[in-house]
Amino acid sequence: MNSKILVIGSSNTDMTVVADKLPSPGETVIGGHFSMGLGGKGANQAVAVCRLGQQAGFVCKIGRDIFGDNALKAYRAEGLDTTGVLRCDTPSGVALITVDAGAENCIVVASGANAEMTPEDIDSLRDLITGAEVLLMQLEIPLPAVKRAAHIAHEAGVTVVLNPAPAVPLDGSLLADVDILVPNEHEAALLSGLPVDDEKSAGAAAAYLQSMGVRDVIITLGARGALVCRGGDAPVAVPALKVKAVDTTAAGDTFCGALCVALTEGLSLEQAARFAARAAALTVQRVGAQEAIPYRNELI
Image (cartoon, rainbow, N blue to C red; front, side, top):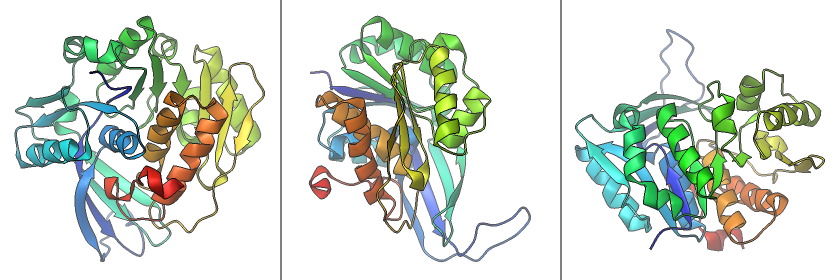
């Protein structure tokens, strides 16, 4: 049976060090707590979907190595449908993360097997894509694969949600296949070429992106919440919950996964964004990526 939400994206092993400050170029900083766990924006979002109560399938590419073996075992333990997990001889992806005392982070990713995902791989999984209600993707796998998946889903009437992270310029052919675009303020600025530093400028950036073919845009604004721009309606501000953040690593991924869960449960875009904001608020109060993602019963 196909999953209601299919996530296509990256799988990484995250190695995280907490330090008082992020190092400047050429600087060595003595850190404190070290942890190793599973991450990658695709995997994080798939785990968020599953933990928040919806059927989730995950498509990714991992190596035939210990990192890949551990990842596959963990995804199955989470309850993900791993039918679409592909293996190759390239090493699995890894991410090196530093988190400072203010909960800001810097991340360096070695994409590894993630970079081997091809349009042909996507074609081989067409039935998984067309059988879903929602397709959720990011940009940590090659853009040609993302484009192919979005087009297949769009043609089949599947709702396409794209989290354009990390940000790269996108053309209208991809955006025309996207139903809901979920960038943060920095990604929205890069994609639109417009500054995004408050709700008004975020609304202008969203309008520009909609003019390129995207139906709906949600711009996440960190501690300021999110701006929901649905079709031609006036933008709606969704405030963030006021919490003490300790690590923002997987907050955006939790938001995206939660958004898709809420949409499949029949909530409006604004209601779904509010649900997603609640889930993200729990995530930032914990250290790590997947280990920080909440379960549905924690939102009640």
